[in-house]
Length: 109
Length: 120
Image 1 (cartoon, rainbow over the protein chains, first blue to last red):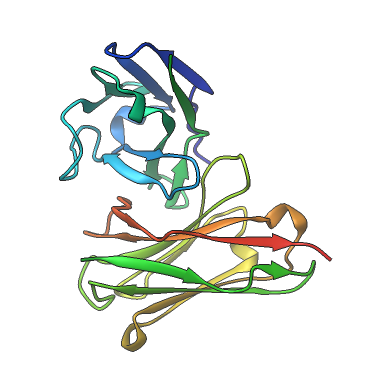
Image 2: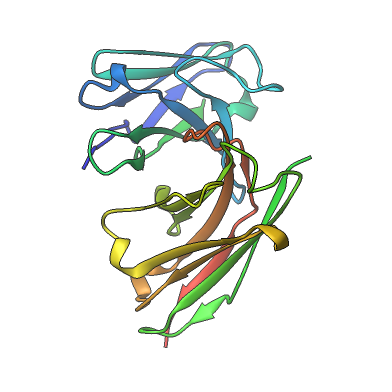
């Protein structure tokens, strides 16, 4: 089955740029979605299809995907961005599974 | 406005069968491309996809849990039901249902989740 690898944690100072990676075999050929989850809350979609943003999500959130790595970039990080972030793909190559990464805890210093 | 809400028991005993219901509003599961997925999250751990059902009754299951899961829909009641057999303490988790569209895997609306504890 397909595996997505995320760093357990990323730390960044307010106002700086955070980059959260999601690694997978030839992930560039798949559509990647990203979710933000704050403590005690349900996940919220922040980026879909690699780089599109749902309505209401700030432009500070952006995404890219190429080769074996997809990246969620959060510009001008704010304290309110502190959360867990998960990447997700649809593995249509074998068993048509939906797969989540292990999650990354973003800490705003 | 799309909303989803999970309901079911908060406590089940080992070996029992869990039945969870996702009741939704703001969309119809008879609309082309629409689907509902189930995802769970053990305390302090990552999200894990379980199952999904599309408007055309196409069903998909997590390979690792396929033998234990059944997903069904009742379009008239706006509900999706997930059953999981042979529950074990490791199945203790918050269970979420979520909406998807365009026959995709994009989960744009989520329920609040329901915590299920497996214990004797």
